[in-house]
Image (tube, rainbow, N blue to C red; front, side):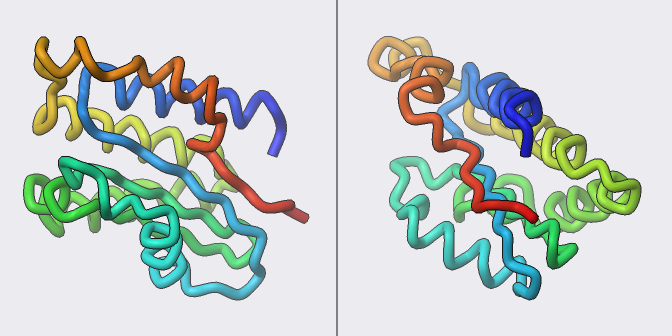
Length: 151
């Protein structure tokens, strides 16, 4: 993935998370054979995202070489948006992947999840005083978008 593509995804994540208590994580995996949903669940637990305070984290996992992808949300996010949201989102991403627009598919998903985070998990004025900005966190960690080497 190019630096520009990485930066576009990172910007979308920062915008999606701004003003919410939610979090969006993107993982790109180089595997040519992978069950994307099983791998997303594994990565979600490995990163301990299920231990977030409000249980409102979403993960987008894309395995371009395997032509697979998955999107999942922690329990509170899932309880608010329901199964139909996830099924619809995955279906709406498909045309981007079909056209080879992997980055656009990811950004689309991040933006859609962001709208739901804004609706269901707005950052209260009290919480905003104690929570660092997502932009500064992203710059410090630079791991909201993690990837393996793509071939």
